[in-house]
Amino acid sequence: MLVSMLLATILIFLGLLLVLVLVHEWGHFIVAKKAGCTVEEFGFGFPPRVFGRMWHGTLYSLNLLPLGGFVKIQGEDMDDPNPSATSFASKSAPWRIAILCAGVAMNMLLAIVLLGIQSGLGSPTVVTNENRARLTNIMTYVLEVAPDSPAAQAGLMQYDRIVRYADTQQPGVADIQSLTKTHAGVPTTLEIERAGQHITLDITARANPPEGQGALGISLGETGLHTTVWWKAPWEGAKRTWEMTVGITSQFAGLIQKLFQKESVGQVLTGPIGIAIYTREAASLGISYFLEFAAMISINLAIINILPLPALDGGRVLFVIIEKAIGRRVPGKVESYAHTTGFLLLIGLMIAITFKDIARYF
Image (cartoon, rainbow, N blue to C red; front, side, top):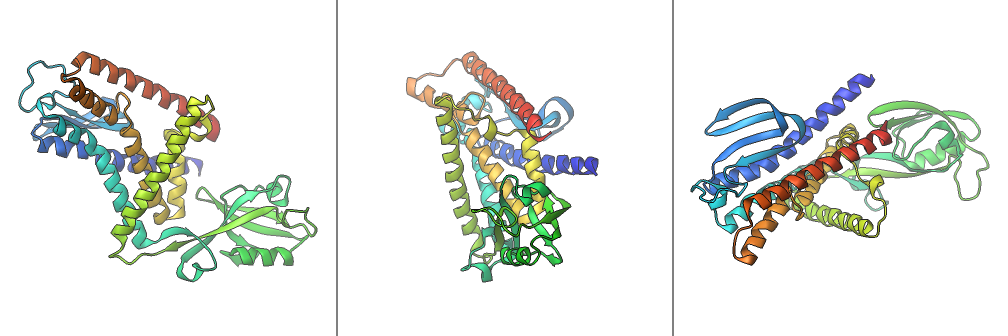
């Protein structure tokens, strides 16, 4: 069971990563071609190379480390003093910025498409008395577990989904409250779903709970799916992409502020292992939740890549802006050294976060 779950997690994660990377790099690729550049290689993953095939003058490669991808454009290192007409270095500043920003634009467009499809299928929405009648697929989740409560002793955890309580399938909050009163003091079976697994627990509700706690010692919430008519779905996808982008940007700003204040941010950062686990959990909830998660990752990828840091798309754009500001090109070796250093630092950060993920999840 554990091996099959691990294999499913890896396959789902690699599938999502493949789509995100290919879309991002295809943006660079198609705009570079439009600008008249020679694209030497389109690679998924980082070297060493496992497989490669030439097609229409471009090497399409599959590489050993499946943690990203790249498009290698002739002259992008900017160290050729006499670049050819098909070189990235020979193109105007607007064209170079367009090529560099195309990957970010494609990730944002992908998010719009994914959230548009999700809106047509049904978007996860918190259930209220006002919208309950308009929602489908309503599910009940554990939001909080009080320490030393019957729920904590039974092994309930935050975000567990209640599948069955006593003999009632898919109970709502009102159902659980009613059944808890009926079964107070009597051991009762509770079935939950956690990370795609169904787990059966025995729990005994308290007849006289402490002040401020319920009989089980949990707080519950319900979510359902809100469906948008097909012709409104694209607009809804664009609107939700904007809202999600604003929210994620705000979170990034908060992280940067914490860094300047020398506060720890390690607990809120996650790497490939954490993302893989979250991918599996999102997939286990259904296609609508998975589409939202994939859109969120795509937006994150876009925001991170546009940051003005060496080795990222935004860092390369920064060098083009510096060039226009000072009236001459930054020496190719200086730019190459900056991006190489930035890349090594990013790999080091990824490794450090991965070790934290291993300690956190295993």
